[in-house]
Length: 291
Ligand SMILES: [Zn+2]
Ligand SMILES: [Zn+2]
Image 1: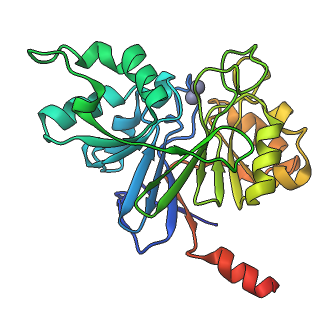
Image 2: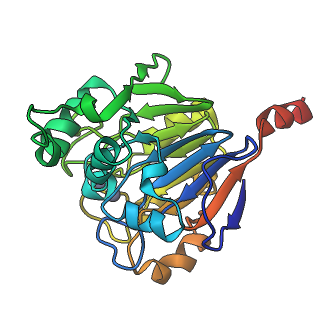
């Protein structure tokens, strides 16, 4: 993994085929100095935006990438720092750029997202009631039967996405099974992006055992309570996992904990306006070298 600053330059939605992750922001839902923890994935001519919060459009504008250029979306759950920008995207798509956008979404979450969130601002825009599919082309993921828990899988061009259910909210849920809809994202079987989740060692242990991730981008709250994983909880993980974890979705005061996390063996803190680049087929080369 190579990490490089983009120095605020325009982010391009295509490259020479390397898998590239770009954090539009790394902040929590309540941050005032950071942008929200939304992620752009680019690989060759393909791209997908993972989550589109209330500040997403403005944050993209600052790096000269209009939200309207994003064609493919994936939403991990319905908190506003992950979906608050979708109304702008769907109204712009229908009335300004005159095209439907694509969203990786199964029928269960489509019903939740439309009926509980997006419908209010868009349904009655015309003489007939509109529905989700007037604005969006759903890319339907299928259940992957081989994963340790319910996991949905889809491809956006050459980008493979696996979506394991996660344990985010409510805070008294015992497991992902009795949590409301939320998913993490496994990208090309190489990277785990947890999105928002409570401390859930079983997610990390079981999926890392299956995929041996190169890196894990993990939710990190700076105190222990509520519906997120705290730094103190994450310190309980075995060192081999801590070494893979890049901390994200943190509060404004993260610098107060910066050294503490590095001393505990975590890989790093996620950086906005930086590109995380993963070489093409480096795994195949690694395995040949080992053999
Ligand atoms: Zn969040
Ligand atoms: Zn959340």
